[in-house]
Length: 390
Image (cartoon, rainbow, N blue to C red; front, side):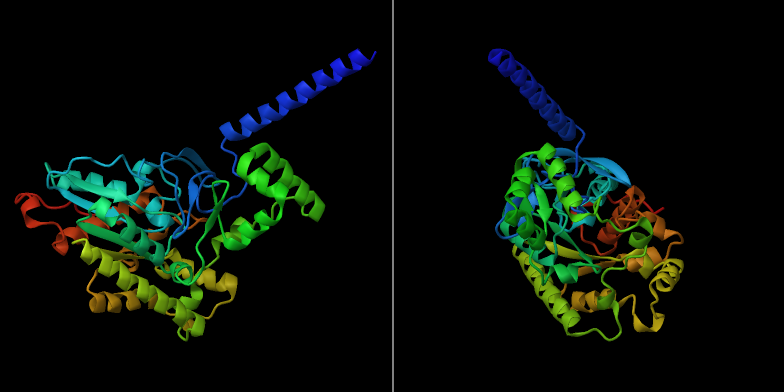
């Protein structure tokens, strides 16, 4: 009798273990994302003591989001680019630094503006080894860009450096603690502290998708939430981050953010020069800054007074700083203002460039390279000009 009971319990135990294992494998093979995190899929990141997080070399995965589903591949150097060319006989190398816009949040590896720019230069400079390394990392501000270039610049040996300033959050990133990592997920220090304080949650985040799924639902049931609290699509559509930095009368906090941004742009310029490279700073706006209809709907939805804001405030400050620090400046606010329907170059909810948006940015960068003579003259065929923007 006892043996039968033990045998039955063993069968039940094996069945439960098999079911848990099957559930674990199912979640892993379907790319379960416990957090709808804007920085990317789980296991994309690893911790970095200086930069906060960095991309995990050799990562292969899928970023599954309500607005897209794309593959993400990271090379052995830790960049979202093809493997680096080992031998360089002359040629021209561009290193593209930035945050999620440069990384290519929401598009395939070959749809980022870095990849598109390389493809365009291959046509404009036939026979020239023109390479564009996508060193963008979601969540990075100007500080991390400068520190990454300082650390990896000699290895990358750029002839030209591209760096972005996204006015909606880069100013804040430059005065805030960077993200950290738990279980391959990029987290704010506050979220990481919550995970660290809960042993069961920490184990789940680090080791088991199945346990993490169960743990989340237990915590939601315990709190009475029933589901993860996420803003509605309508609320997200009208979210306007970075408004304080566009105010006509910015407060002390906004001034401190800009001072930090100036400091790190100066450092980025200095490191670029030490590497013998020119620096191009690209200002990335949000649609409401150049689309009058979007701005009117946003003001109405949020109850904002138009006269309280200068939508080109960050762009003008960067323009003045470009003269003082002597870097080359590309203002996408002006580029997008000149084209009707430019708001379609962004995803409606997550506000990043679509594939069409990346293509337009690559066109604008290529035109700038030729207009400002940033490509060595001996590399430019005398009978060819860059493609005309569409």
